[in-house]
Image (cartoon, rainbow, N blue to C red):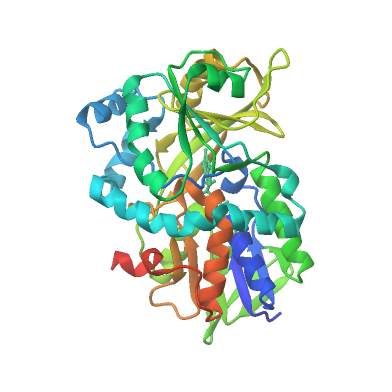
Length: 413
Ligand SMILES: Cc1cc2nc3c(=O)[nH]c(=O)nc-3n(C[C@H](O)[C@H](O)[C@H](O)COP(=O)(O)OP(=O)(O)OC[C@H]3O[C@@H](n4cnc5c(N)ncnc54)[C@H](O)[C@@H]3O)c2cc1C
């Protein structure tokens, strides 16, 4: 069959792109080897992180690096065999984490973040998915004065962007979340972020609405993509699909497709784990809670209390090593009455990330008719809908809602 656009990858990013293109009257086929929202977009912490103007940066202090190297930071883990291969990417990440570069990141990222809550809201209303969403912000807890000081240092820039970050007492935090135990010494409530009870459910609802708009969701292997004249063809379970334009939104698998086409981009992954728990004794949470020094988030989801871990540097397909989950679970049990694990196996996923932590949204270098929506790192669930809007505007020749230049693949030369 012939269509206007093929979108490869039905995570939150590809689904949002497909949706925005279909809304503009294009015929679109969304291709994935699984169902929509079953991979990274399923397993995340479900935060619409409107307020994350600073990235998760590479540690700049030697003492912090030593903690990671010695396995004393529960927020980070690494595989020795991956470090050598990752060294150039890590060095670029370290450089991009210099204080001045973090300000550049914030300036660029704020251009997207400013849209995130409204774009999700618009899509959720259209898709009948508002029941997954809640406000109430994001509660961050600090065990040490030094940790709280770092957080405080972010307030001036956050306030200059009109964001609400407020330091609160331990008692105030306990009044907000009565099931928490006072194992922390300080807290900050960020009011602007929203969160969801099922990021996979949200992605599926957006995909279902895309289908209502006339879009098609098909199973297929994106790696079958081939040039066909000046356009593209991909094989799906229901036969070949041909289109003049293709969008690559394969998340952590994007380079598997792009490399053979000669598109060289420094995309790597930051792995992470999650586990669901039953809450004991009628305990409950009403919003995501970050234990900063503990290196984990706990958040209420449809499947129970979800604990998500920090970053693991490893080959994407290396076997799971959920040591962070084991470490953080002990800390989380001190903070909240977690009951038994609800699943036999931890979930693992990979955050697709460029060293400067900005996504690529725009044309693929050297490939006419190919567009990219990749590298959304820790913020892909947040950024999916605005990425979809921005890319659809670029592809349609509309005036973009924000300057797409900082997100161009050309920045890598
Ligand atoms: C532990 C953890 C916590 C996180 N918490 C948050 C959070 O709170 N908020 C936030 O904004 N972000 C969070 N993130 C990041 C976020 O989950 C990702 O950035 C986002 O899901 C990436 O979406 P995507 O659509 O690019 O990729 P994916 O959701 O991975 O989608 C890619 C799709 O491509 C498909 N695919 C791959 N290869 C092929 C192929 N050969 N053929 C066909 N299909 C293929 C896959 O099946 C998949 O459906 C978290 C990530 C992790 C790991």
